[in-house]
Length: 104
Image: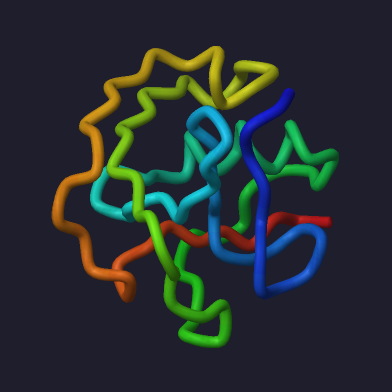
């Protein structure tokens, strides 16, 4: 499953970044939920999502912030298998970026 990673935390917790083409960017948190997070944790071999309340310790997003909306059931093998709406690069505060802490 390409195109998803966690940064600024551990291998299994951190700020969510996704890739469009060659550009990695943080994911806006406005539509991020536990089902989406579950899929990403599973995709990264990190178990399931325990929390999407990341602290500021995961840092602010830098550069591009994508405002994609994923509609996952929570059982998909990859984030990109979920139905998705790409909202482009809308205004989203770097402080309002998606985070997840996985169970592993």
